[in-house]
Image (cartoon, rainbow, N blue to C red; front, side):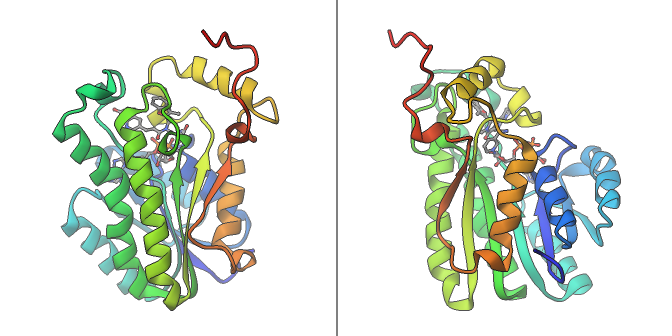
Length: 260
Ligand code: NAD
Ligand code: 0WE
């Protein structure tokens, strides 16, 4: 599906990351891959993973810093020249903001969550687009909390709403250059970011009970949908949010749950 294509995977932290499921699917489908890592500590985790899929590019990237985004894409331009796809799988919010009542969200909490989790897609797209071949594809990762008030997701839900709107505006802006932009809205998956969330087990159990398939989804299932969206098989698809959630969002919720 991706033979002859070169693409960047942004947001692998470890082998549980959704971005790693995407990388495995893209490698299996024949893509040449490049990876970013956030800081020295994660380089030690990401480098062996990148090597295991024969990555030809590995460079640091903190999306909070425009200079690092510039340096990252300068390196992509020097090493690769052109690019076919980008996967954005990055989010961050202050941990306290995901526990406290939503009304207690501070201005700093809001700025941080929207900067790292939503603006970063725009910052990446504006530097990737000039390097992209016709038929290029950008995919980002979202969550149902963008359109539903999911308990404790809080300011991250606001950030995902901004991310999904940014997908539509980027798709409109870049469509004339034959670059597509989509989001995948994944059901809950136990990753580094998720495991730091209190009572994630309960959320996973509820989500499985409410899902059409009566189970949760895996990183690789999200990776397979993403690989499809990155491929020419998806040439007519842009500006959309695609749910990979075992059907949870079309259901009425956990049938065993007490509504009171
Ligand atoms: P993860 O912790 O494996 O990945 C998050 C990544 O964001 C990490 O690699 C981290 O290094 C990176 N990151 C954070 N701040 C950064 C910064 N300033 N600069 C560069 N990178 C930074 O967790 P994950 O669950 O794989 O998350 C990936 C994406 O999937 C996120 O956008 C998340 O919102 C989304 N998502 C996750 C779930 C889930 O249940 N795990 C569900 C739906 C969507
Ligand atoms: O997008 C996410 C994870 C977002 C996230 C998680 C953390 C925890 C640790 C962003 N920033 C941080 N910052 C930290 O310090 N998901 C979709 C997974 C997730 O997170 C939740 C969820 C789900 C699902 C938080 C509360 C409720 C549900």
